[in-house]
Image 1 (cartoon, rainbow, N blue to C red):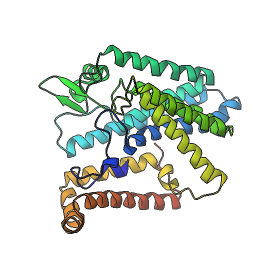
Image 2: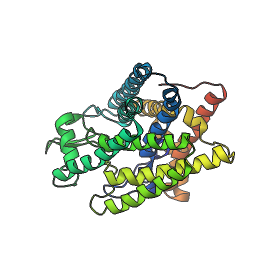
Image 3: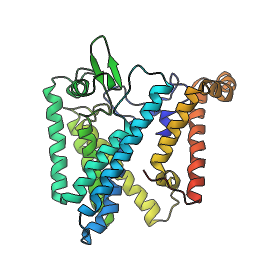
Image 4: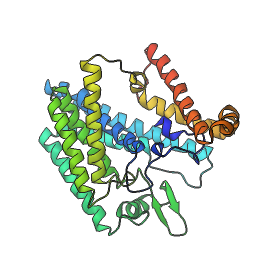
Length: 336
C-alpha cells in the first residue's frame, strides 16, 4: 500500500503499480483484498483456540467492538487530515481503514457466534446476493451501477468521487461494495482455520478452486476492484490463499526469514503514520520541493520521468521499513 499510494508523480507510474481503470486486474488490485484476507486469517488464529477451549464468546465481544471502533475512528481522523491538507471540497466518510474496521467487526462476530458451516453459508449468501444487487442495477458502468447509486444515496457528497453536475457519486470503499469485501474477510477466516489445523491440501484446493470459479464467473460478471465483484472476491481470494500457503511453507516449515515481519506487527501504525507524514508534507508545502530536488531534477534527464517517480516511492517505503524495524527491535508494537 505504501509503495502504490506514494509515487513521486501520479502522471508517471508504471502500469503494474496502478489499479485497473475499471474492469480488469493488476498486481496492485491484490493488495487490499490480501490485507482483508489476512485480517480474517488473524481472527481465526487469535480466537480459534480460546473458543475451542471453551472460553465464552461474550468474553471477546467488547474488545472486538472496541477495536473495530478504534480502526474506523482512525480512518475518519486520517480523512479529516486529508480534507485539511489537500483543501478538498468535501469530507470523505468511507475509506481503507473504515472498510477494514467494518470487515473486522463482522468477521470477528462470525467467528464468535457462527459455526464453520454457517460461515460458509454467509459467503454463499453474500456472493450471489451481491451479484443479484449489481444485476438489478441494469449496468456495471461507472457512476450509474447499483453500488455507486446506493452510495450516492447513502453518502452523497461524502463519496470519494462526486459530480455536482449529475448528482452522482462513487466510492471504491463504499457501503454496497463492502458486501464483497466482507466475503473476502470471511474466506480468510476459513483459510486461517485450515492453516491452524494443518490442512495444507485444503488451502491448495481452495486456492485453485476459487480462481477457476472466478474465471468462469467473470464471463458474466467481470473482475472489478472498484465494485469488489464476486468474481474479484474469488480471484483475489484464490491468489491470497495461494500466497498464504506459500508463506507458510517457506517461513513456518522451511525456516526462511520472515522479511515482512516488522511491517506485519505494526501494519496499521505504518499505514496511518505514513499517511500523516504525507499530509503534513502537503500542508507545509514540502512534498513537491522534496520530490523535485531529491529525485526528479537530476534523475529525469538521465532516466526519464518514470524512474524518479518509482525511486521516490521506494525511498518512502524504505524510510518506513526502517521505522518499523527500529520499533520491532525495541519491542514497540502499536495496537489499534
